[in-house]
Length: 335
Picture 1 (cartoon, rainbow, N blue to C red):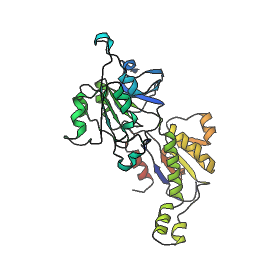
Picture 2 (tube, rainbow, N blue to C red):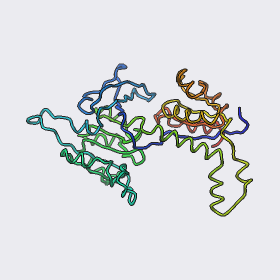
Picture 3 (tube, rainbow, N blue to C red):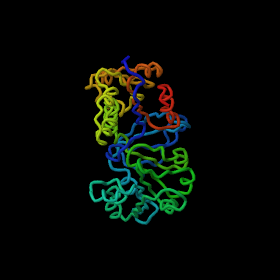
Picture 4 (cartoon, rainbow, N blue to C red):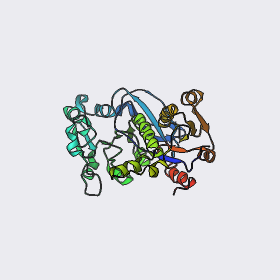
């Protein structure tokens, strides 16, 4: 074990971006161990699927869908056979995004209310109604006005529209709730599943962004950068005050709690720093990935934490992982 303690903790359970469109995630109930998604072909076009078990409570599972077109396009291109001549049914789409104000002048900055995720021209050209707002809190907010008759809701991780059981029960027409990014903890998944709604997210879209962000934070913390920057910004120059808590990353033991896509990408990047790398997970990620990262599996959390100089948490937020950071903070005696 390396010389200094307690370990640094770089907690990253839900940092997300809205870039990327490679996958969609369908969340539905499981009956007798069988995935029971109804009419998914009518909502999302897809070429192939694979089931992933997620350690959530009350038998909820997550299913990534490799999409041949976007979720919105798939949902809005649904044909209503009850309409004369098989005409396309127009839908009401509501987008909830943060306002970017002067930054919205950049047309490439799509994930804001002003630029409407770049979907307005496409949706309105198909005859659909597209309502965009940033007003999402309280009984009298703009979002509340549209809940009873909206067909699709699009939101983002950093400005989520919280869909409570009460809101979902009022949403009589709602077919698809799409997170333009990663994470669906702002939605009551069990109520959505009971009502047959599709809940989708762009799975994997934030992997590189979060892994790079975590590496940056580890270096900033180890090098004691923030106090140094503050000191210099205020006109000071006390080298000792910074240097006595500044350390090299080389030779340190760095561990990730969770070895999914983000944990794996972080380990790959840390390998170049000549660290001892550990990961804690329920199962080994396999010889091939361990060889690629140089990481060692530790199945005992106490042993894992005792061995680490730096700990990074990379777990999806669920009922069973919600307070894992508190447990780790407590173990490290930093609360």
